Image 1: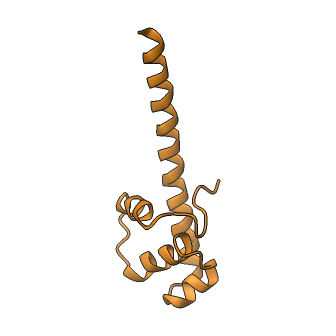
Image 2: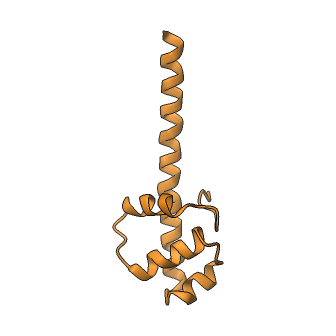
Length: 88
């Protein structure tokens, strides 16, 4: 599932998500930001940053997996908090 949308993410959010990875390639980080923050299509983000499209796709898929886990945690936390409020 795609959680991250081109041009719809804040730079701060993307930086935090990347901080959960071992990603260190500045060109890949710039390509990801160009796509997710600035709205470049995938091909343009790769070309502008000299990133191989296949590697970009794998990285983006990994970031979406991480965000999927974050979203599941948020649902668990929300459900727990609403259960706690009901018990009071």
